[in-house]
Structure formats: structure tokens, C-alpha cells
Image (tube, rainbow, N blue to C red; front, side, top):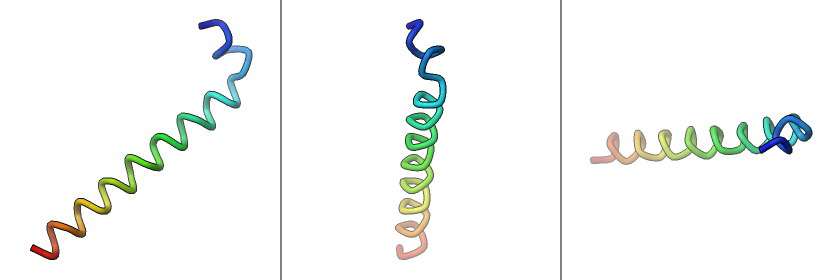
Amino acid sequence: MCSIFKDRKEYQFQESLLTQKENEKEEEEEEERKSC
């Protein structure tokens, strides 16, 4: 996994995208709870 260190920015970018998606999922779940 040496490439992670080589492409650290790329890796951080991918990770930030992942966390963004997770945050969006959490927000959607919260909205669903409110609508119940």
C-alpha cells in the first residue's frame, strides 16, 4: 500500500468523499425519522 503515501492527496480526497457520503446518509436517516 505504498501508493497511498505517494498519492496522499488523492487518498485524502477519496476519504473526504467517503465521509461526505456517510454524512449525507445520516442526514437522510434523520429526515426519515422526523417524517415518521
